[in-house]
Image 1 (cartoon, rainbow over the protein chains, first blue to last red):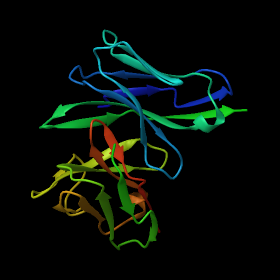
Image 2 (cartoon, chains in turn blue, brown):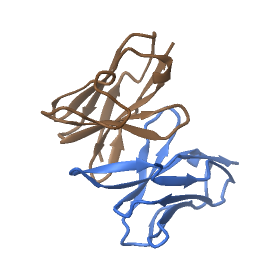
Image 3 (tube, chains in turn orange, yellow):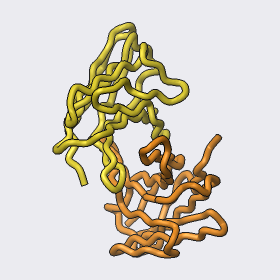
Length: 114
Length: 111
């Protein structure tokens, strides 16, 4: 059972544009929603995260929007740059057996073209 | 955050052989996690390694195929045993410190 659904699978955005990646979850026990950025040949890096008690979190050009009632959250990348070209994973985590178990979305390959 | 060193960074192995991947963390952690990322796919948890106890494996992963050691609070190894081409993946070590942090991964190709 896929607990975190992510779309789109791939995304092409022009430099300076807004990149938007969407995720939906099913398990209401999730209490932490991070986004990861992965460049080829590297491990995923934690980019930004949100807890369900807030509806939005912004860090620089990256913003998470969170809709608890709809069980959806999204990543917005403002003023997208070619250096943002990477694969992005949303994730959701909750306590499972005494530790935070993290479930990942399927990933979105973002390409920002000059 | 966490600094996680993983080695080897990549390897090409023959079918039927085994590879041991090492993971070193910059400071003590209770739990370490091993993930697999198949080509172009998302991350799948293989097992959770607790120091001083046997690793806990996720559905679809077994100890005979992926034995894990956790001799102290900063180090763990994952062995991929009796490899087949289907084992070709990136293997990632991670720790949770207010968020999940990953090493750079081991890219394994099995011929």
